[in-house]
Length: 205
Image 1 (tube, rainbow, N blue to C red):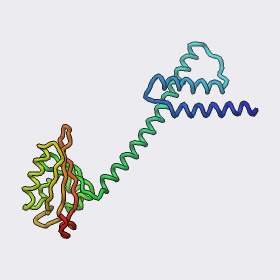
Image 2: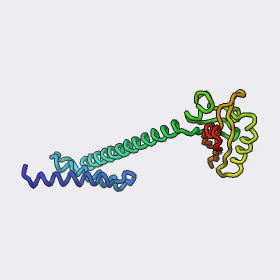
Image 3: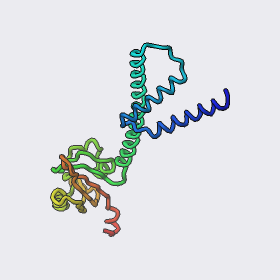
Image 4: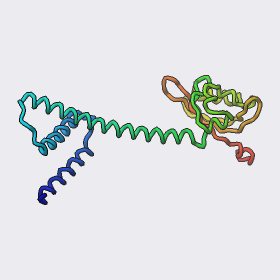
């Protein structure tokens, strides 16, 4: 192959790669323009038989539409892979965080929690869903927690408290809790719970 032709082919490939990187697949006009260009490049490298004008126009439209679909499919595939990676990262950060995370409704029922939160309450995570968090607060700490929980829903700001967690009269751990209400239709309360038992023993808090 002559050197000049080889250079032209390389240049076309580079231009095509740059075009794909800069393409906004949500822009219909730009999508069609680039699909038209790709089809033209293909037609320049293949000898097509002569056909009637109407049939040729229909064939052209079908080929352009096919290329549009291929380009959109590639964009969707990349978006799906990005979303999957973000979900995996979020799941790892939430489930295995060293802090207990809980999502409660206005009555105190547990809707979601992570593994650390389940360990604090001394049970498996799926068994704790729909249980009331107040059941795991010691009797001595219950007034403190109820006051804290009420303030979370009335102050519209982050609140905090220290309580002792227990179940059936058996102490579990001392914890520091921060809570805030999500401003949406469900008005769920998000709690972050930190085990401070060791600090209590050392007299730090």
